[in-house]
Image 1: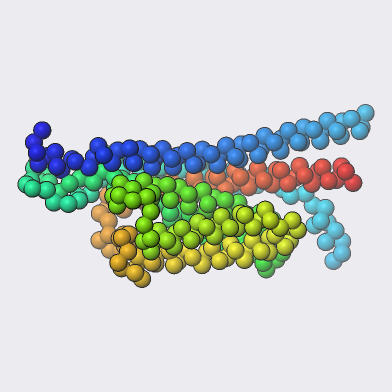
Image 2: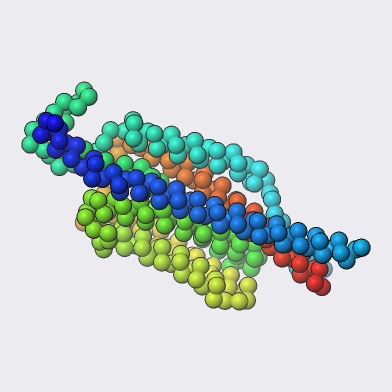
Length: 60
Length: 257
């Protein structure tokens, strides 16, 4: 490769892991928060089911 | 008066309001805008030039005589995410003030969720910033004024969340947390203005005339609006989930009575 071009593009490959990590970790952080919301929702729904069963048991 | 108080006390916290209907559309808009911004950052906006090289070469239809900095592409998500964290903190502070005025716990819930979203975006800003810092400056951390004020901001947000887990009484917890929420917001303008106040900062002042090319500005705007949409949708999703859980708890209490 042309040495001048080599120098022009010299930071592209070394910066790639940091660039990929920055974008990947950004979305990982978002996904973790979404997971927290989904887990909380499921837990509350489960509790509601238990309450419904309890109410059914009381009315029977 | 006593009747209205009694009614308020027995009123179940609501789950699912009109913004929740809007949320799915907002998240779709957020995904589309951030994807467009991502594609624009890599395929439309030309790379920023770094140090001069010994010579010049024709790349495409331009003569290039500098190193092309690929790591700068992190900026197109780093800055919008930071701005979104500031916006989330502004909302949190607004709800903190509303709680302090009205003493209504629903404002505390709003503030708490806005703070959670702010922490998420603060962490995202830190992650993207750290990666960029490590490559460009060769260190994981430096006591640059912008970095330092932003670290303080993140620590205050973490302190807010830790404090909430330390106080049992809901009203006292909300009052203490609201004060910390307002303090966190005070750091926002300091953090934003620090590059202007201390010009020696390694962070450049980009929000000024000539700070960015039109393509860079458009890319930042796309990602910025997209990230605001994502933050709004996350806030509503979490709010809906928390209110739903509160409603279940209230039902449980009623049944126990």
